[in-house]
Length: 273
Figure 1 (cartoon, helix red, strand yellow):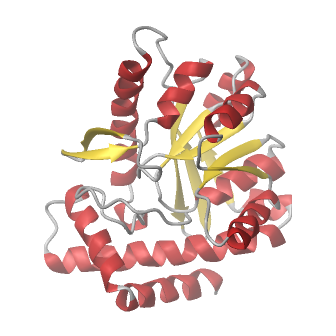
Figure 2 (cartoon, one colour; figure 1 turned 180 degrees about the vertical axis):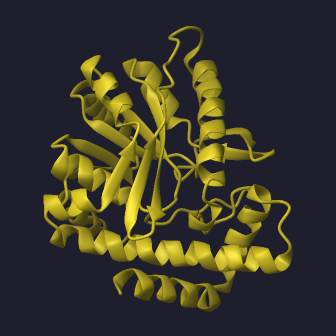
């Protein structure tokens, strides 16, 4: 009932927010260039349905115990995270805005008993940001706001072997690097690659898909920093690798991708996800 209701509300939002629906349509044309207009419209509605479910499940997570979270979650590639932590590093998980990544963070924090740190936009007014931070803290996420203090805080988290979760398919801070993304240049965040180079920790491209009533997490193999050459050059090269991995993860379920701001026309605006 919750899933169906939240998806229905999401589809209604696609009608009521035509600018965001058009932005998602523009993005999906890049991802799925062969779609006709009917197929594209259906995909946009599915994306909004996924976004509605994302919010409903995020708000519900604080009410669930560890057993309920575990029973609703499956993970492939968890051994990659364990190997990175065994090597003495906090894994850097880079995810697209797809499906329900919050469930993975809750599973890590509440079930696997692993500390999780994530970066979020500093929302206005401050009370909204504090509410969002408290919401995530309730299921085990330490929140770091976007800004000048983010990199030092994340560096400490990696060295303390936290799992660091970063959304990598949208340049929220406006400090990213232009790389090929689905065949055209797009600005993607370079921060994950800089964090990787500075700490020696690898990046794990990851996605969390809605799979019926469950959520299925796919954790990719590590992308290790080489530690050679200029920082900016290596970070850009790593971001190119991350972009290619994110493409594969998004192509697996474009109907669950919910970036509601244009990615390829330079009009990059952030949202709370």
